[in-house]
Image (cartoon, rainbow, N blue to C red; front, top):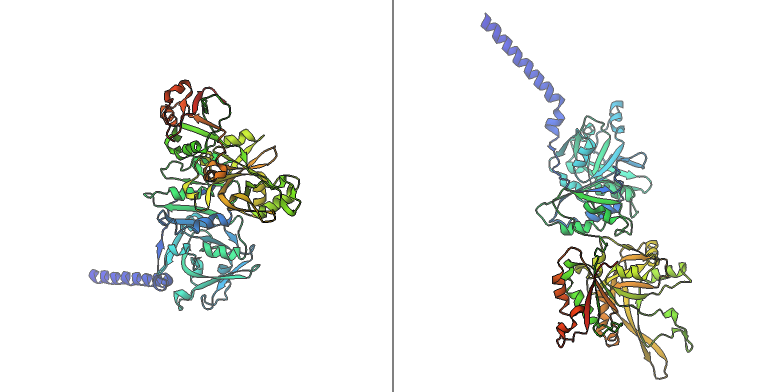
Length: 575
C-alpha cells in the first residue's frame, strides 16, 4: 500500500512540474521560440578619451569634431580598433522628431496598456558602440538578433536601431528581419530616414530611449546644415596597443589638446581657428608626441661677426643655408637660432602711378613682393582703408626676431606648430608647392576668420620684372619663387607692415642672379644651459673661427671652400 501511495505521489509531482514547465514556455514563448538572438557585451576599450579642457562633465561638442575622426577610419585602420561616439540624448518632442513602423513592421494594437508602452519612448540617442547603452542604462542587457552585429552601428551606409524590449512584442514576427524597419522623421527639415531593427535592450530602468546609428541620427538632425552645435556627448577611441600611434596622435592634436601637456595649448588655435576647448587623454604608455613650448632658455649667446672688425656682417646666404641644412646635427645643444636677413620686398602702393600708363605703379624694374588671397586682401582693404595691406616680408628662423622687431608683440601659432618649426619646416608640409611657413599680421588672420577660411591659402613670394616695348612703354611680368603655409599670426601696437616667412623656403630666391648681393645681417645662437656644448663648438669651427683664436684657421678654407672671414664669440649672462 505504501509503495502504491509513493508511486501516485511521484506521478503527481511529475505532472505538476510538467505543468509548470509548460506555463513557463508559454509565458516566455516569444523569447525562446520566435525571437532568436544573443546577449551582447561590449568589448570596447577606452584607450583615448576626448574631454573638455574646462573639466565640465558634459562634452557638448559640435558634430564637426567627431566627423574629422569618423572620416579618417580607413586611413587609421591599422591603429584604430573601434570608435565609440555617442550623441546627446534628444527629446523627440522638443526636437520635432517622430517615429513609426514601416508598413507591417509593428502589429496593430489599440489597448491603453500598449499605447502607454509606445508613448513611453520619448528619447533617441545616436551610438556607434554598445558601451554607450551600458553607460546610459547601467543594469541593461543587450540582445543582438542573429545575423547582425555591433559593428554595424559604426557603418555609415545603412542605419540601425536597438529598441527597448518593451516594444519587441509589437514587432511583426511574420515578416523577414530585413523588413523590420523603424522610420524616423524631423518636422522642421522634412527629413525621413529608415532604421533597421537589429536588437533590443532590457533594463530595470525606464524603457524610454531608441538607440540608433550615430551617423543616421546625425544626418537626420543636421539635414542641410554644415554642423550641429552641442551634438556629441561622448568620443572615445580603442587602439591597437602594439602599434605606433604617433601619426594618429599628431592628427588628433590638430583639433584637440594633448591632455598630458594641455597647458601648452592654451592661447593656441586649432585647425578651425578656434581656441582649444577639448583635449584627448589616454591610458597608453607614451610620451607627449609634440613639444609646443616656445620659451627660449639659455643664459649664454653665441654671435657671429667679421674677423676684420667691420660692423656690417655682409655674409653670403650659403652660410645660413648650411646652418639650416645641418640643424639636426647640433639642435640638441641649442634652444634657439636667429638668422637675421632684414626686411625686403616692395609695397606697390608706395610708388606713384605711371603718368603714361594709368593704373600701373612706377615700381623698380626688378622687385619681389608677397601676394595672398584676393578675398582676404579685399576684406582688409575695407576695414583698414588708411593702412597698409600689401605687406613687405622678412625671413626669420625664430619668433625671437619678431619680438625684437615688433612693439608689444604676441605671436599665436596654429595647431601644434612651435618655434622650432621656424628653423626647419616639417617634411610632411613641404610639397611641390609649399616651401616654408609664414606668420601673418593679425588683420590677415581676422579677415580669414570672417571669411571662414579654415585651411589657410598660402602666401606667395613673387618676382616682378619690367618689360619694355619698342616705344619704351613698360609692363611687368613675373613668376612665383616660393609659397608659404600660414602657421600663425602676430599682434602688435606698431603698424602692420610685414609678413614673416621662414628662411627655409625664402632662400629659394638666392638661386637667381638678382639676389646674389643680398646678405645675412646677423646670426645668434642660444646654447642650452647645463650642457657640454663642445660638439656645437666643434661644428661651428667648420665655418667660423673662435674669436679668441682667429689665427687658428688662418690661410685655411672652411667647409664651404671659402676663406675664414667670420668668427664666433660666446657671450655669458645675456638677456
